[in-house]
Length: 96
Image 1 (cartoon, rainbow, N blue to C red):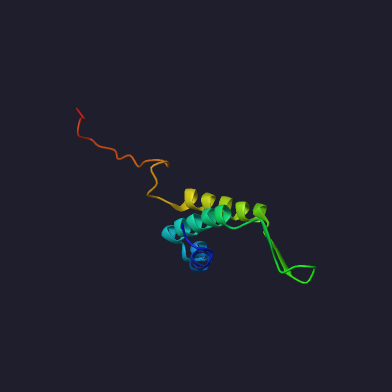
Image 2 (cartoon, rainbow, N blue to C red):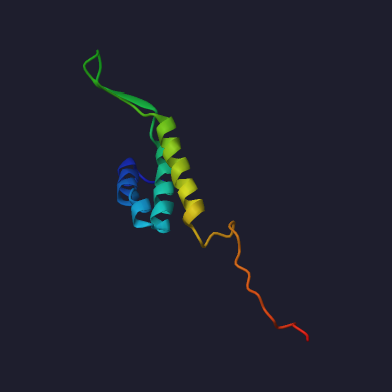
C-alpha cells in the first residue's frame, strides 16, 4: 500500500490524463484515487481545545472523480476487450 504522500504525488503527476489523451496516465490516476479513498480518513483533528487544525474530506467528490476517470477510460481505451471488436471482410470463400 502506498503512503499518502505517494498517492498525492501520483494524483498530481497523472491529473492531466485527459489533456494528454493518455490512457496509462488515466489508469495510474484511477489507481491512486482508489487508494486515496481507501486510505485517507474522512476527517482528522490535530491539536486540541479548539486551537487545533481540523481536516475533513468529502468522499463524494473523490468518488465523482473516480467515476469520471473510469468513464474516460472506458471511452478512450481502445485496447480494452470490453469494447466492440473490429471485423474484417474477406472474399476467401467467395464463389462465382
